[in-house]
Length: 528
Picture 1: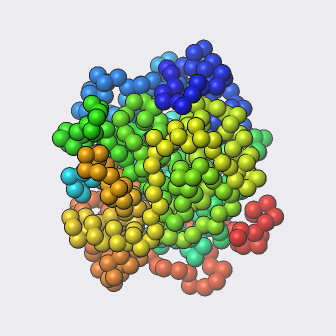
Picture 2: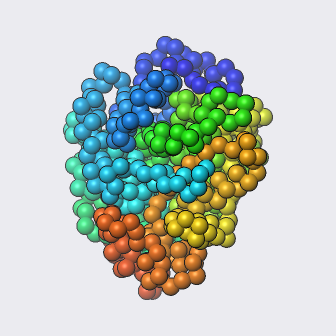
Picture 3: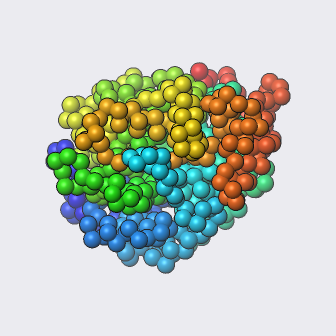
């Protein structure tokens, strides 16, 4: 394979990996770890040098293969994409193993198609990625990852403890994916209500599973999602500690999450109506834009990988008021120590988008030394990208920041216009797509897909704020589609969920501990 679309010649180390290294390997974006097989990368989560993994070689998808993929179901397409990153002679994951893993992963989804496309206009579609058990897009990657981990651990007769930090949806999705699975314990840290904009339904989804499953453990944190990432990152960077305690990750750091998110892009693109994929003026290639609501940047990294595989898309990174990623793309600068704002889209309330190192690894031509330098600069206060890297990103990734007022207005106006209720995260993406369309001439416009993050029933207080209605009315608005078993199950939780806590110092049932402000859990420093 060969690197696609780099702005200049790749580093010597990367060229060696492409030309002479073993096939189907993953390299650390920091360059300080040996290339890992698919199985090793999955079990490691983070590379031993503290970096994230990226495929060492990316084979472009031929037009013939892309055409053949048009008829595949989402599970079958998932198999085909994952196969491209697993060695054909891998003894740990055979094609038959992979088929079984993928088939089981989506068996509990509420829509037979797994992912559905919903038109909002002739030029804008939402790819509904939320049909899984917790009604979040993360169920797709997490379900495959949980079963992949369980399969590998059984085969190797090993155990693993998963450490997970969540700003909202990752925690419940990870818990649901591994509950009851042999050989896996999971410990999730989440920001308590009042310290974040986590919704009561999101919290209840986590506490309910923690109370019911013996291998699931939950810790509340008096701090933001960025605050709780600090001790987690410290644990993963301590190689001896990580090895002694058999720690693994299911955040978007894990390569399975990255690869399954690539599937979304191909599947949604191939489901666009043929007439919508008209070539832009002066081009013969049928292109599309994908609006990507961004938090930690995992979906955006997957979009770059889809581009490397040859999918003819451009990306639109959509952030809320926590706009560090937007500022990086717009100005080439990323500053440390930004304050996290609580917004109507809580799963995106992140000021340290840790997948940025993957983005910069690709944009720099696989220059791990440059990534290490930028990481050091960021740790010292901030980084500034060189012009060539900014230009490489500019032609592939646009960006926009959307405030809460526009998010709520987009939810309301979309429902008024076409009877479709967006969750607040997807609304950020739709609003960004509409901003981009307004700035273009009609001739230059291409069809836009917005990645649909979650179902609105998880965010009833935000629905009520957008529509200026009561809580019962918000529940009624968000309760469709009828007969969707996952929506109905979460709807029952929504009726039980309570805003806020009954008293100061209260420990939510299901939490095994709470990390309080002023305690030493952050290495001697209290969260801001």
